[in-house]
Length: 250
Ligand code: FPP
Image (cartoon, rainbow, N blue to C red):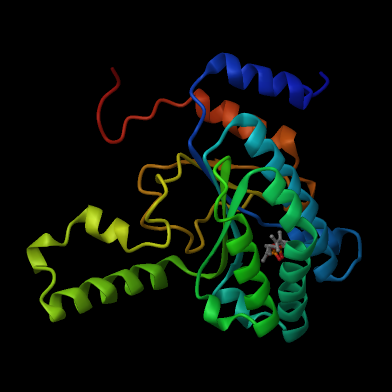
């Protein structure tokens, strides 16, 4: 049977109605995609940039509020120097090539993570695109760079501890809302759907606090091959889930 066209999948999403507000994606499999073609790994990452463009456009069409992409983990700093520098250059290139288009599409770009570790050129590009697109409201695109979820939780704990030490907050005022407000994602709803590509079944230190009740979807497709069809397929699968948040069905 022929696979459904993206436009048909989009129509079905609209018929179903309840669209997720926030979709997060662990973009995995660039290295394997390159290896399968006997290409150097950075070419897999470069090819993955096309998939980023495609899912941003798909997210706008579906009407997501937030799209979160895990682009570079804290652990990724341990990769060979050549691959790290290729990823930093790609980040700059992505911003250079896409900033005006993202702005025109109404996308607000936010880069989240330990940005102080970026190269000065990458940090300047990040700063530029965040300022340029800050006023946009159509879609919020969170790009997680130099990010680790445990480090994010440690950071939140330190921020709250500092407020307690300064006397501006009491320990008993620290609750789930207070912690959420110290996360990089403070102004976003928690993800409704987390997609991981390339068949791996791990969270890999991504948004640990925020995914407590998120629906997981594992796609066997390698990230450079991920297109609207796969995004829409994941959203359709999500729409058939019974989200109970620990309660019983209605
Ligand atoms: C994981 O694949 C992917 C990454 C570490 C980098 C993700 C980067 C991009 C998609 C391109 C750049 C995007 C922007 C927005 C700048 P992997 O290398 O771990 O793949 P493997 O598991 O097959 O080795």
